[in-house]
Image 1 (tube, rainbow, N blue to C red):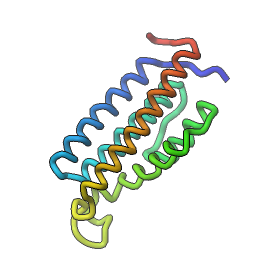
Image 2: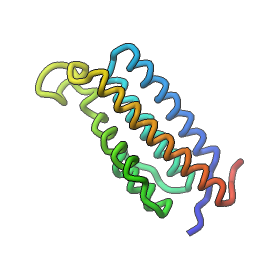
Image 3: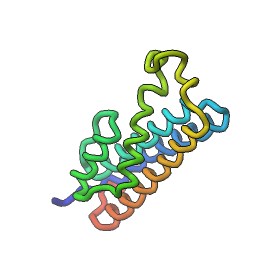
Length: 147
């Protein structure tokens, strides 16, 4: 199956992912670790959706594990194990990092520390490196449309 490469769509999503990454780093630096984790998860979502949209595939939902499965189906190969692990860890921050009732007691921030945001940012870097490498390979191997 020939993939259609949509560079402007990829770049639009990837730029949004970069903004969320920067915000995650800022939140980590100010010790708002739950928000850093959530924003790292959001940046990974945006990047994965950008890769899928850029490859002409649908990208729906908010579960990073499902988005990873969709990328495997669309691109014809599984992500490396470290990427799969990073997606799984990051996906855990989608709800509990934000909602006060996601934990038995206390606000979300009471359940997150510097080690959590550090891990989330490291996981995000793994995902972004994967997305960028796959995009370069995809854009270099197929005809480019819209650029």
